Length: 146
Image 1 (cartoon, rainbow, N blue to C red):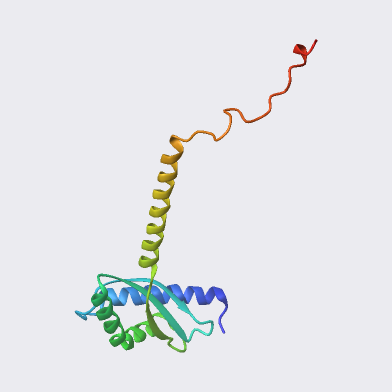
Image 2 (image 1 turned 90 degrees about the vertical axis):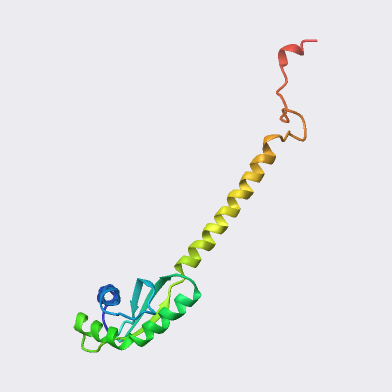
């Protein structure tokens, strides 16, 4: 088993190799605008999971997934040549959910901003429920001379 630093280095190297190979070598028309976002390897360096995003709708994403699966063998060969590992890692391509998560966070933040604006608007014309100064005033002892 490799140490964590070597595993991280190999993950970065696999990500770079896969991204470059997809950009320059894979000529599949089903392949959309693919961005390789991350790669993670098991500690024994035998399996690599490659995360990617695709610009487009669901059909483009599905076509890209099929294209990556069909090109998996040649991409794996390129990874084997590029890393120099004794055993070439098997590849698994997973669609990254970063864009959907980012959109969800943006929607939640927009909703929170709208609620804050509503509260601020209501607070502009609000008045205290009790006296204007609800705190007890200290007695002035100089007036109690009688």
